Length: 219
Image 1: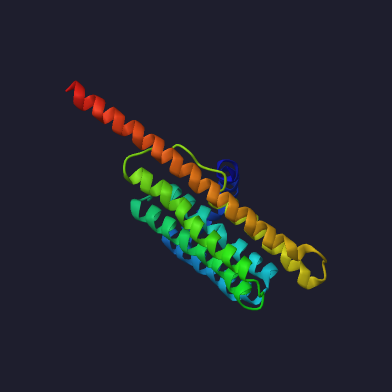
Image 2: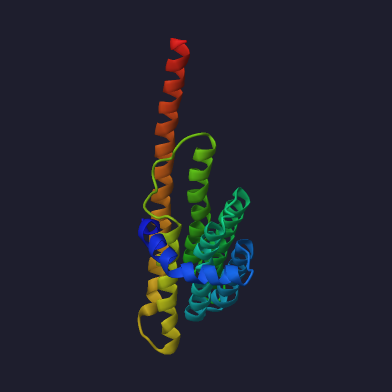
């Protein structure tokens, strides 16, 4: 849902930055790699230590590379299948690092096995959400549904909550409960989204199979 509106807005905002990087000879692939490395560092260095505010700041600085690299490729006229593949693959790596960082915190000093399990479920379900659409399209189906919680929603909900929860270290009371709430929301929303996509693929495959049989019978 957020993709539809936020991506268009940030594309306009980040276009001058993309143009500047191109003039400096920076390639879109380099931006993709650096952005992913920055997100992973923010998630796996800060989150396992409970430093959610600073981890979120670092991740936010680098997460916009996901929009900048594509913008650069379009401006330079060098959009390619390889670039799209690299971007999509490293998005999954970055997402896994974020929720892996949460899981490491709750498995360690956070000392909450339930929230550790919820974080791991968020990590795994996020990958499955992406896979269901990619696999459905790979077998020739449109998968004409986005679902309740896509990647943008997962990132916004979890990172905003983590950043606010991190203010607890600065003496702000009560905000530490926001991250657990956000993780449960992402977990439930991801499960619903998987269900939506599975149901859609089942319906579309049945319709495609029926259309194929009808064409075969007419022939």
